[in-house]
Length: 370
Image 1 (cartoon, helix red, strand yellow):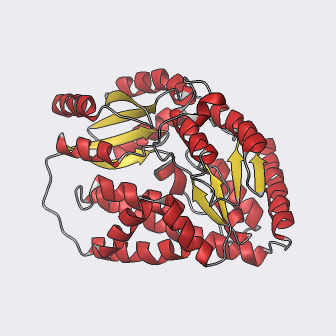
Image 2: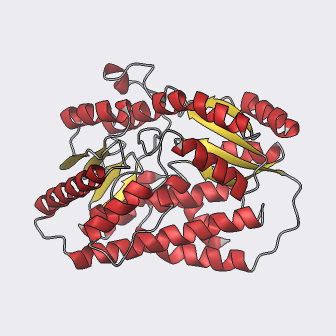
Image 3: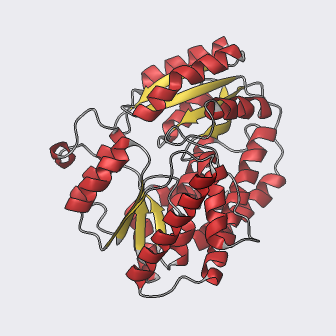
C-alpha cells in the first residue's frame, strides 16, 4: 500500500522530515512524552515532533547522565549534544519520570534551542483539584507559546487543532480495530511505522494519508489465522524488529498499551467545550502510564480489559532498560494478570542495542507455551 510506504520512508530519517517541515516555514518543537499537549503546540503554528533516539553510541551524554539512566533519555541527549537535533527550534518537557525531569534540567542548561518549556502536569488525576491544576498548567503553557510567537492563540485556532488531532486519533483507532478483528490484515512493522510517523510527520499530511489506509483496509479480506493473539505493554517500542520477531514466532499483535501506541492516540477531545478544558479532560481521562495515578489497579485493569476485548492469548511486557516507573509497576501487573489467568512474558530491551536472537527464542518459547 503506497500510503503505508510513505510512513515507512518517513520514519527512517527525522532530519528529512524536519527539512520538509522547514520548507513550509514552520518551526519545530520536540517532545519526549505522550502527555505533551500537541494541540497547543500545533495551534501556535509550531510543528510538534516526538523525539526518538538515533541509536548512536553514547559518548557526549556520558558527561551528564549515568550509565544506569534510561537508554532512551541518554540516546536523545546524545543526539542533541552531537548536533543531530539542530533542526529543533524548541523543546517541551512534560514532567513524568525522574529521568525526563533530570534531562529537562540538563537540556535547559546545555541546549541551544530558542524555546524551552516545562509542562508540569499533575501526577494524581482523579481529584477535582487535579482538573483545576491541569487547566492552569495548560493555560500557562499557552501563554508561553504566545510569548514565543508574538501572537494570540485563539479558541478558533485551538478548535481547528483539536479537529485535526481528533481525525488522526480516530483513524489510528480504526486501523487498530481492523487488526484486532482481522488479525494479519496489516503487519506489525506497518503499525509501528504508521504510529511513529503520525507522531513525527506533518500532521496535515498524516490526516490525509490515514483515511486512505482505513479505506483500503475496509476492502481487504484476510484468511483466518491460527497465530496467537498478543498484547504488548510498556513505555516505547522503537524497534520494528521486535514486531517481526513476534510474528515469526507465530504471534500477531492485536493491541498494545504503549506510549508509542494506543496511550498516545486513544481518546478524542470533546469539541463542544472550552478548548483548554477539553484538552485537559482528555489528559485526565486517557489511559495512564506508571508516572500517573488514577486508582491503585487502573493500569492492571486496563491491560486485562485490552486482553479480554482483543481475545488475546498472552501479554508481552517490553521493559526499556533502566525504566524505573515500569519496573516498579511490573510485579503487581504480573500478579494481577496471573490471577486473571492471562499468560504473560517480560523482556528487557536497550534502546541502543538489542539481542534479537535471544529475544526470538524467548518469543518462540512463550508463544508455543500459550
